[in-house]
Length: 220
Ligand SMILES: CC(C)(COP(=O)(O)OP(=O)(O)OC[C@H]1O[C@@H](n2cnc3c(N)ncnc32)[C@H](O)[C@@H]1OP(=O)(O)O)[C@@H](O)C(=O)NCCC(=O)NCCS
Figure 1 (cartoon, helix red, strand yellow):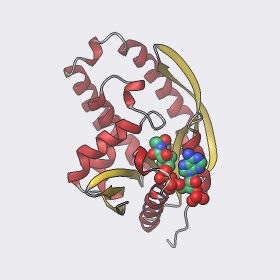
Figure 2 (spheres, protein in one colour):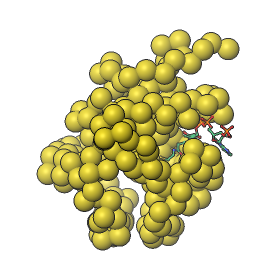
Figure 3 (tube, protein in one colour):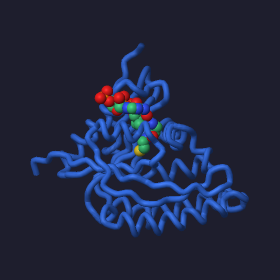
Figure 4 (tube, protein in one colour):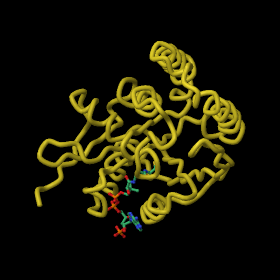
């Protein structure tokens, strides 16, 4: 099997990264399981990282094909501000232009966005107002179980440490057992857990989101 290469993200990876993120967004399955518009979802899930802090994203490729990524942020407060003031309004405008608000399923989804928004900002106030870091990771099904995720988190942790960050966090759906094992193996522990709601098959799904956190060494 050909070797997997781990390297820094470059803008030429953007389309493939957006696609891979949407392919694995539902605990390893496609975003369409719970959100109808891939383009809007990719903006929400990846645009901060690719367009506002690209130096903290790393990718894995095999034969020039993107098979993994870690989207990193080394300043949660900046992330919150960019999402709220810049990306949020831009994504809303895009969603409107694409007719998303005229689709019947969207009204139920908007209800959950409001509930989750309130919950995230109340429950996770401390982490959103910190200048610590967080990450999202996705590995293509055919590249899982080959230490690719571990290498990507390691390279991000070294980069974050160089920026003086002492803590990296990742949010995980409680039913995502693969990700839970993965983060535990990498030395993350659950620091917070808070209730969330999603729409699955037209019905509300209530679950807990687990905030996995790892302290990273820093010489600063
Ligand atoms: C979770 C995920 C990132 C793991 O990536 P991966 O490249 O397969 O993981 P690695 O091969 O680097 O494994 C690192 C360690 O985690 C463990 N691990 C990974 N997946 C596991 C699983 N499904 N069950 C048990 N342990 C697992 C490995 O055994 C390994 O431990 P070891 O080093 O002691 O052998 C990958 O399955 C994925 O992309 N899932 C879909 C997206 C997702 O859920 N992202 C997380 C939310 S941010």
